[in-house]
Length: 75
Image (cartoon, rainbow, N blue to C red; front, side):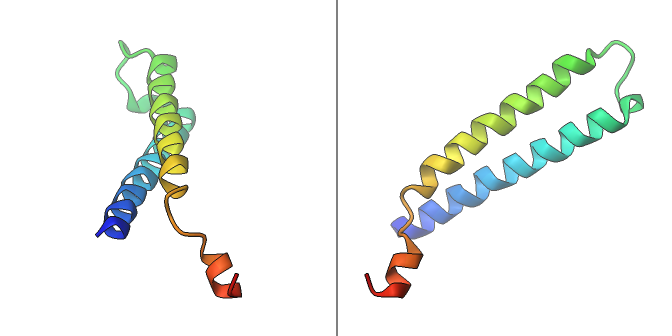
């Protein structure tokens, strides 16, 4: 049960990191997607914050997963 919960959180954080990364790339390459009144830098900063936050959470949750390389080596 614990392993399933950890995997679920891992996938959630990974998907948020990927979503943020794609949005950042899109905003940097196509500025015509946003209305004129939108502050582009503020929107990019928002997605960078989302990516950073979820990447940090992902690193923490990964520390709770068993180290599979040690198990395979028999150590």
